[in-house]
Image 1 (cartoon, chains in turn blue, orange):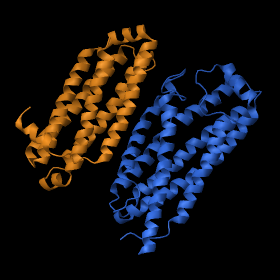
Image 2 (spheres, helix red, strand yellow):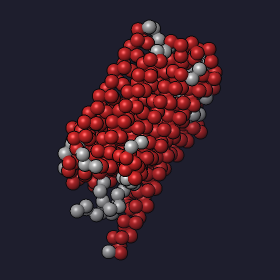
Image 3 (cartoon, helix red, strand yellow):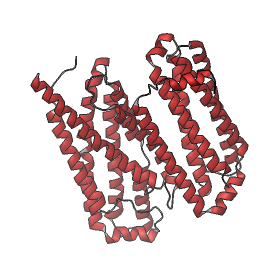
Length: 241
Length: 193
């Protein structure tokens, strides 16, 4: 019914990608550039310019590192699509798997673009302060506002997860429901541009950063370990058989 | 409570655990919304008092009534689905959809009234809270109504109902959550002084 093949190489790709994303993106954004947690949108023009003047080198270095990390999200998500396609192959064209992969590209691009805006702000540091602030704001609005790429990814994973009628599905059903919840939770991010000072929906706020950033990360990590576990058990059964 | 309700309570719920996980997670998010509202109110008591005075609690009360009624219809639809009384099920589902649409219309009228009176999401803290939280709730109403419309369009024969009872119950459960959240939002935003 379902083709059995050695899934280990794909899991290694996914694991390595996840590790590299974590090391480069988290290291670059949190540790080196200090851009995460995000600076307050309420900073004055002078404060923003100062941020770039004082940390110019570490900002550029951290953002370049983060950019590398973002790229590794792609293989991770495509491995997800391959596992999803196993379930969907029965129904003909694997719409949700393809959709998930394409939305992953969108997520990756929208995570990468802001770093270019911030790098441009840091690039000619002597330029007019208004322009630095503008690139800074552009970067943060781009970083925090678009959510539909990730939301669609979550919905696709959930639909396929709930369709999976195999005795040992890859994704436990409650994880699919949580994916739907994550997608629903992303509906708040279009409010980011209304919060020019601070507040729960500001780009450094409770909903737009702390939940919208860490909840999907936690979900991804849990999912990865669940899948590794399932594959391990599945492979053992193959050996026993 | 009548005899039919007692029967209902005795039946074991077949809603799968994942739906409960979703509802719990969603209610956690909404409790954070309530917390944010309370915190902002604590920081700007005068602004919130003035803002609340501009709201028309008649609209809010009407919508509370509408959602409670739709919850009743949804519950009777679930009950009828379990009992395989298809006519009652379809009729209840239709009435629940009508209530969902009425809620949407009333909310739209209310928003239009506020916006034409010059209040919008960036007016102040109160209105930012008001539009954000009631807006998220309205998205929940739209999603819920869409699911109920799906029930009406795709799960309406005796066989379909039998095969999808737990799905129908899941939709019902979600709809009750939407109702419950509105009751809290209504009290918090319109009533609590």
